[in-house]
Length: 206
Image 1 (cartoon, rainbow, N blue to C red):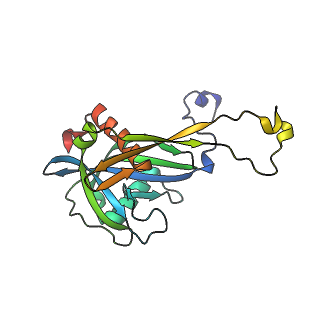
Image 2 (image 1 turned 90 degrees about the vertical axis):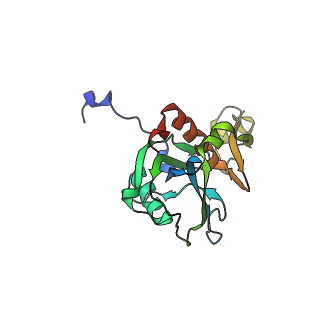
Image 3 (image 1 turned 45 degrees about the horizontal axis):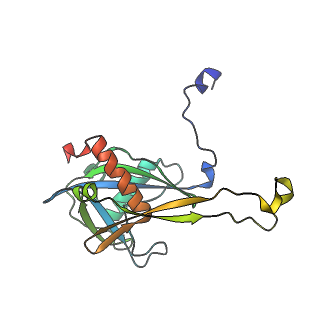
């Protein structure tokens, strides 16, 4: 690469190597009540977040792009073929304060028979997009604080142990639909996805 290439480079993200990378599909399906988002209930036998509601997806494997990972995981979890999935485009990346980065992609799933892998998924269900457009999520805020290791070099910073660390907060969204609660990272991605659906008129081909 030459100096001339620098101006047009795609900026990286400092510290990105420290994040676990995941990808999900925010899937649109056509239902009797109109376009809806498809959700999974995770199997109760899973070690991570058993029983919670999520989009299909998972961790990137070595050499995979986020879109490839999202499609692969969706095919495995929902037992669908690649030809049934139409990728509309990327959603906004979710960055967790807990060293996780999630890459959502908005997609249409056609001719789905609502099957799924029982090893990973307990059930699937849909929520009309209109519901999310008409109901804002309830928002709560967790407060984040610093905890330094025992060998932290306080002598190297002004104020030492009395240094005025910046405090932050972490927004947590909740949607309630019938008997189900969609919350946390999934609910935050839902809110962003619904905004993009409206902004780019993505329901015209569903």
